[in-house]
Amino acid sequence: MTGTVWADTPRISVRHRARLAHETCDVAVIGAGISGALAALKLAAGGHDVVVVDRREPCRGSTLASTAMIQFELDTTLSELADKIGAAAAERTYLRSFRALDTLESLIQSLDLSCGWKRRKALYLAGDQHGFRALKSEAAYRAKIGLPSEYLDSGALADAFGIDRTGAILSDGAAEVNPVQLAAGCLREARRRGARIYAPHDVKRVDPHRNGVHLQTAEGTVIAARRAVFATGYEVIDGLPRDRFEIISTWALATKPLPADALWPERCLIWEASDPYLYMRTTHDNRILAGGEDSRLNDADRRDAAIPNKAARLLAKISALLPGRRLEVDYAWAGAFADNPTGMPLLAPVPDLRNCFAVLGCGGNGITFSAIAAEIVAAWIDGRTDPDADLFR
Ligand SMILES: Cc1cc2nc3c(=O)[nH]c(=O)nc-3n(C[C@H](O)[C@H](O)[C@H](O)COP(=O)(O)OP(=O)(O)OC[C@H]3O[C@@H](n4cnc5c(N)ncnc54)[C@H](O)[C@@H]3O)c2cc1C
Image (cartoon, rainbow, N blue to C red):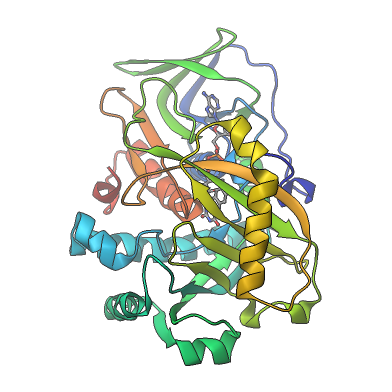
């Protein structure tokens, strides 16, 4: 991954400690991306003694690559998810995702966090995976369970957005954010509440025991914790489940700023029911931020080598969808995430590693899942059961 648009934004650093001697804590959070940051803050705010450790500087994993379209919609439609995991579970998953955005918004407001959070609508265009008929029935299903989605036919879509597709779903309740400012802000607040943040320290070994867990770093230092939360993104430590997920490579770009009137109405998030898909949003300084072209490539060097080619393809797709704009690429980068056929993450205690909890597989709309994960983790630490924990095991 090279040159993401967020790397040049302010307030993305978090003070951390480089020197790690033997540490003892209540909860160790491994991974200082958005998942680790939200979990660490929730736990520190709940009175727990928290240590965060990352092999890189905080917020430099896939969170730095994210286009950060925050949505309740999973990559798997509600109808598809119902076929895969049953209607009741699918509906609860979508409704929980919907509520997660309110939770995230309340957190950001309560911290008065300046992280570019802005509510947007989301426009889901018919494509080669789901045509207009499928989207029409998907919108009706969502509306039936109380989600704010409405179907637009091709005429309404052209009138409202000037986009030529056979149909779309327009949903309320989405948002955009600067993901690094959000994660960094949460980590700073966690630190203010007593969390110690260590980086760069690579956790290499996990030794659970009856009363806790020992985490050994590459330098041989041990962190002794009562519980450990693994929020390591797509990089999985030995002993944690990896077989349920596939690593997906994805590419993104940010254009040079455009005149505000060259952007589209309401600056909604736009994505499409195609494979590979295109997704895009705008930024506060009037750039188009787009991503997609996902592939099963799992090699960091080849992923990076493909950036120019993938950026050119993304730009051509944007131009086809929104003709008449003069678009120039200012930033282009690649990233990876872990995905599986349902599009759902694993947010659960690890069966073979006592006292360890995994926050893994937060894929395409991972930041919404990170927010849900923080709540499920906090319940687990406090000995409660989150009412939706069963959905993410
Ligand atoms: C290009 C791109 C676009 C995306 N767009 C969106 C989007 O529009 N909306 C959305 O919701 N999601 C999106 N995602 C997904 C989202 O970005 C991720 O789900 C989210 O950032 C994952 O956060 P995380 O904290 O779980 O992982 P990460 O940010 O990857 O953090 C994991 C951290 O763990 C650390 N770590 C790993 N192993 C170890 C170890 N052994 N010891 C110590 N530390 C370790 C890493 O260094 C890293 O900092 C996108 C992802 C990419 C790549």
